[in-house]
Image (cartoon, rainbow, N blue to C red; front, side, top):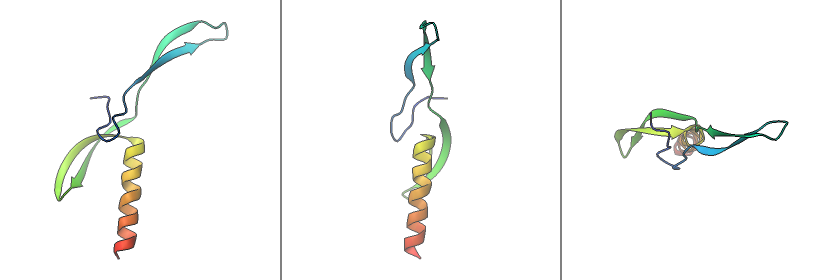
Length: 69
């Protein structure tokens, strides 16, 4: 699976683990990516979204549903 969000372009972050003795070892933080099918302009589209973008999509859908009816 591609480790990149299709909406916000979030990708893996790199850094160091730092132990109590101050040794630095390389590590990687991975984004929480989920494959999702979303309707865009009346067509189904398959996207890889991070959980933050997925949550925001749900919020937008809730707001649109509450204001439309």
